[in-house]
Image (cartoon, rainbow, N blue to C red; front, side, top):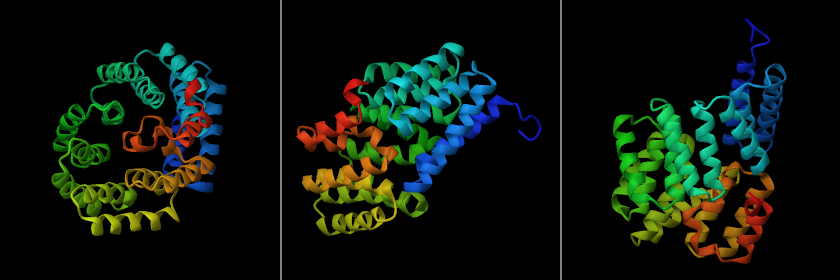
Length: 288
């Protein structure tokens, strides 16, 4: 932008950056990042209303921050109409289709994105969460093993591998892998503590499970990302009222991770609770 202040694609790129920053932040910091993202994306579209990347950026912002599923879908469709080979737009669209429970469409869309761009890790990595939501755990594990062995620094593969080991019942190996991840990835401790709490519970070690749950509860005082993980653990441990209290906090804070709740496989025990249906209604999933 210093070289060309009218470079629309650069504004769209800044919009993506601050949307990502918002997704990773909590509370006021997240709000501020989303505001910056909105301003940059708006400017990109003012400069070039037919820029595919800008429409994809707006779609991602609408789905992540506003939970405006119809508006986001409109933008993703526009982005892919303008550029059918925009793999990023296809991947982000696929994720949202998964949020909405439109699994077959999501898998078709992400496979199309990978076909267009088989090189960029982010595009292929999107498939992990879609496969998990679809309950296709063996397939997810196979891909996670391949991705992790190819690139041990790939953050998505690092998370996917122990997650799919858990889903396929390989608890001891999942614990070993997760413990290793927890040491080398300090930035996402809420993910590892949540998974370890459940894994240790599965192998009959309530002491270790309780230690990790307590760590997660401490993290939730500072980081809303931990609240979503905490809600999952409470649901798994039968603490149903606590689970809904944590989910309600996520809703009030507009915690971005809540977009997965409609298809989260680890909350099966609370799906029939009227409070779960009320949350789905409030997030407008039923009308997506």
